[in-house]
Image (cartoon, rainbow, N blue to C red; front, side):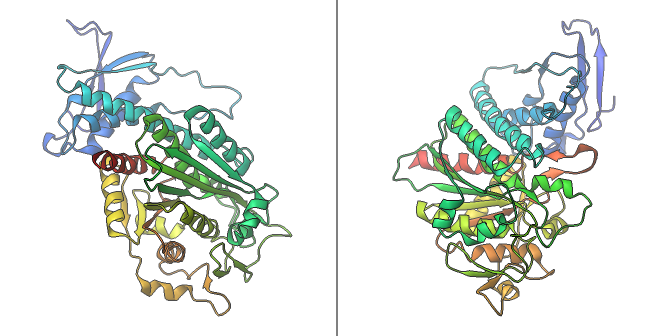
Length: 448
């Protein structure tokens, strides 16, 4: 055992130790032991426990010194890392796996000095993990199960079990509100669209809320601009932005966060059909702006723009939308971090800091007026695509036209919302980032 990062080894019947087994975990070099190395060490330890018949384990990694991280952070991320390893999605399997897994994980401390901070971290970690697991479940469900109506039902269940207020708008109510952009996406599907509004009232009513908006395309064929068949099954993950909002609302409700937060999920399928919107069609958004739809596969921005206009009625202190919006963002940033765009330097800084603290990082990209030129249309106020160049930027520029009345940020999570290959599945990101941002906002509210 050389202590190399990622290495683990079991010792058996160690003299003077009551436990049947002792697990040694390699941590690498002490001077470079930071957030990533700490989370990896916890994952490696729990992975080693899991499936070996271990039912109860005592873990002392929380006492390690982690560069620029406090005890509360270490406890929170121990819970999150362990939960990530232990998560299983077997809802759709007729036979469940028989592998053993941990039923109890004890966070061990040698002194009582840091106990309050560790306990706060555990409580927050458990709430965030519950939200992440809910979002992963929603993302992993197939499109024939997790429909817009299923998302709406999930929101209602959260209302019953966690004290969140819920409002559900159907097609007729969307028509009354003149949500022409959202409804243009829903036209090709037999599944009725749903507009989901969840409210967490954790502060006095006079306090302006933070609004989270999540893209809820429960399956995306591309519509008339149909996608290629390869890996199209992964388009069930196109509602991961909406799932992240629902999961975040559950987490903050469990934490009883002292902050007013509103979660909005416009939900629909994007399907081809006789009634489907065609390339070249022009629709009128809720804001009154007309949109030339040059590509029906650029549908996420169409449902989000009406949701952004709807959010104006809440006079929000800030609005953050979360969406698996563009493949261009994956090309730019890969699968490591989300793309961040904002019309507010302060809001962008807060979200970037929350991403660093939660180790659920984002990277800010430009939102310059120069890029708006690519969205010009000869026939409408704006086109819904701006060409191949800077695709993630022009998508954000499109959304910015509907977010002029409040501080707004857009998180493009196309590269981080799910994994492909043998570990295929939803990740639950960016719930850690969002919850950390809201926790810090709530602290600010308490100080006032």
